Length: 226
Image (tube, rainbow, N blue to C red):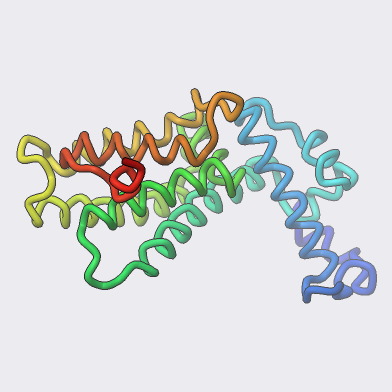
């Protein structure tokens, strides 16, 4: 059932009353549904997401989901786009707090850490978007792909700046280096086990690996640890 059809029968008093924090009950319920979908999608994948499971985690009746999302595909599309958009925004925010005089290699390593931490510590949406990018139909991916292009442009600038500064190893093509690096970072989701190492330990190793691979240098963190 389409969302607008259900909306005609909704009770403004029960659905739109504002709770503490400034969000209406409707907004809070919608967020719970989206959060639940992001978590399940990050764990079970596209084929494993069931609306009954989403409803159970979100603590709503399954038919209520159709008030907010016209279909399972629309709900998944929203999760996928949100995951990529939030990851990009988080990385941009981490870069914006750096001094204007920061060296290209420091900016790149800051972005690497921001990407990893958002993916592993902060956002089920990020996990869901990365893990399911190759599983969902293209029709669901269209908006996410536009966001991926924006995020990819951010990384292209970082690698281009590194190359222009002379810090990127001469044998590397910036685009190839970018794709190899991002593939390695995103694959962490498939093998990292928090029972074996902490996120902090993983980040230290990832920064050292990227620094060594791309410009043969040490991170500031690795220098301090000596």
